Length: 141
Image (cartoon, rainbow, N blue to C red; front, side):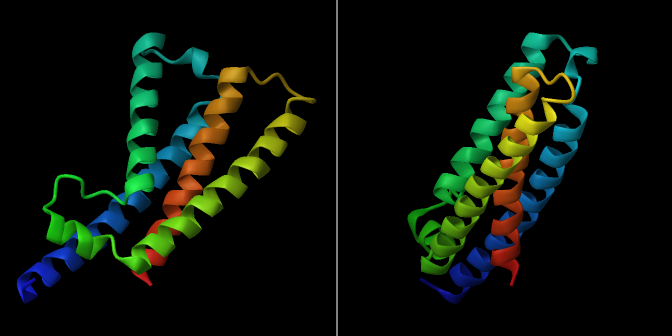
């Protein structure tokens, strides 16, 4: 490994943290806008398919740390032990966020109508957003 590899890996890791923070913001907005999503002008099949693909994409990034298209040396530099520990903490945060948001949605459904699809979208969006925010925050400290 050269010094330029280390510098490049540092830039990629910072960019990854920024992209994760932006993705979390998008998921937070989507969770809010997803309430009552039957009023969307986009066809339901396309809307649900794009949402599902985006969620799978961010789950893969959280699970692997990203950088799958990079060479082995760069990938090992950006996905080091600290990054692995940060990702583990972020996944724990996502789990607890899912449990807490699930409870909130459950009790909210006692007072207002929440469809299963809406509830699952809210829980999924907010829990993944929590994991992405935590990972981005830990990576930029």
